[in-house]
Length: 440
Image (cartoon, rainbow, N blue to C red; front, side, top):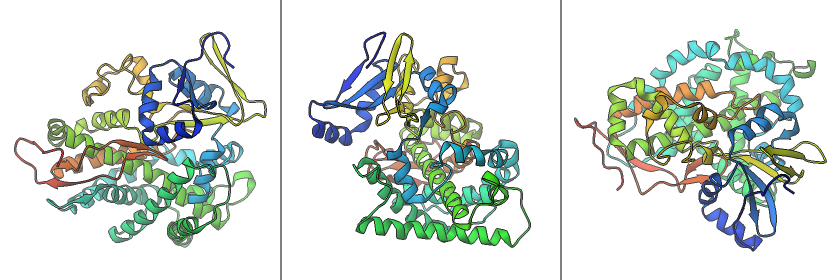
């Protein structure tokens, strides 16, 4: 129960089943509506309040940094990811992460990554140059392939062939589709998966794990390269080396979770490039604008659209915003409303307008409200890689040509924020004025 003030409550419907149905039909409608209701909003499904949305940057920082030990990633998120990918950096307990993180963090820092990042632009340029003109493209597949090839090189020093990358992306997409459905289901808490669809998921997962086994085995036979894979091999969490199975699932996790969110971000850059041809043409002419284009894309369509947490203790935990106090019980969840905070009109004037120029000089409040990679020790460890890949890809994609997308893309928030129904479109050869037809 709230103390010290009235808790804003967004009640979707009086019926639990109808609330669930309405929410699943258009989650972003409710998430965005809740953003302007207050720093903490009770998300009510019929008579039940399973989730509190956090719309205040200071409250977000309290659970992600200041009081992080009181909060954990919730079981209904962790269990499905563990089933679809295996134990990895995302699913590890706080204790296990604390033991492993010191071994890996130095190799994820920008300075350590610079030699590989300096070469990733050429890799991405080659992949983009291979995209055909004037034919329908599955942008989810194409951007997934580009992101995977870039990640394989930066993280593991592997030159991943295009056909192999396509195969891996196809299997990953199938596994993530299963994951999306599992997270939404009442079985999300269950740590085992039975049935025909689960068997198919495991077959798709096995392909990624086989590739992970392959690169781990190859690295054991060659000299160290001073990268993330070497750091995993050398790590001794709890005083012991990781088993081959543990190494494979960590590698698969870096491919799976990291590639999924980076590919989603690349798809959204295509959406905003198609909708804003003048900005796309400016990007083509001046690649120094890529960081701002990427930042605005991540503001409007952050792949990590919400950051869920649940209390670690059996008695729950308390949220505080000014005089308002809310007790959250163990079976309840809080979610940092990353999507909503970055569209709050009181923070972002003309919030729904795509305007990369706003990132040339953000206010302190805007800087605090922009959290596309989370915060704290469990924030995105690969954010430098993701931003570097986005910058390189944006330059290459805009130089490749004008872009069109089919229909009117809208977001679908599941494991990551993707285009509902997938993103399809085409490239046209660059026109002198940089104009593109955006919807066909």
